[in-house]
Amino acid sequence: QVQLVESGGGLVQPGGSLRLSCAASGNIVSSDVMGWYRQPAGQPRELVAQINSDGSTWIESSVKDRFTISRDNAKNTVSLQMYSLKPEDTALYYCNVWRRVDGSNINFWGQGTQVTVSS
Image: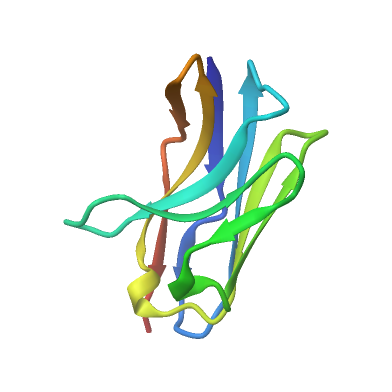
């Protein structure tokens, strides 16, 4: 099992910045993919960004110019730095660890941290 604890959410004005952090504990495997999803109220959860253990990243196109994802393998942490935030970025943000085991997708989730962008 993997436990994930997010921090760093909050209320920010449009154009502001926030940094989300996630600490992973438990049975972390070096090949695990770490990432962030978000779920706006009443909408499905969507992938925002992922980072592999080698540092390669994928970031959703609508935030690619404003968000960056980073990872510290030694500390088992993943962070999402968000700049130039917009009201449409308002959502519950979830930390995620994904691995593939014997052909099956295994996902672990944090509890989520709320990001609200509003003036």
